[in-house]
Length: 152
Image (cartoon, rainbow, N blue to C red; front, top):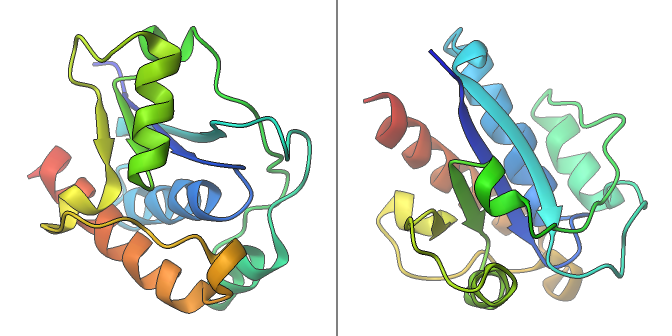
């Protein structure tokens, strides 16, 4: 059985999407199901390409005992639509950017993370809010819901 391939996407791939990537990996590992998933993250823009994860995200993950060492921002590619089973945006702008890049969403692969927590809102960007704790709480809620959605 092939792993479920999940790509988390935000604007720069230094705050929210790497946070979701590593939280989701941690959830899967704690359930001893890491082998069931292939998880990564990317950006809709190229502004941060090659940069490491934002220190605020590193700090929040570290407090939870999660490492994101070795992660550097990368830009979303047109080939990502075919390569991933789910493309999870952090906000409506990310979702619109992905649909624009991929020419739509014919296979209904593009979702917003908070949909899996039963909410319609966006994950706030801590680059602007400065509140990495609130973002972390929303990411955990979304990833926990996503895990339960995928694994029952």
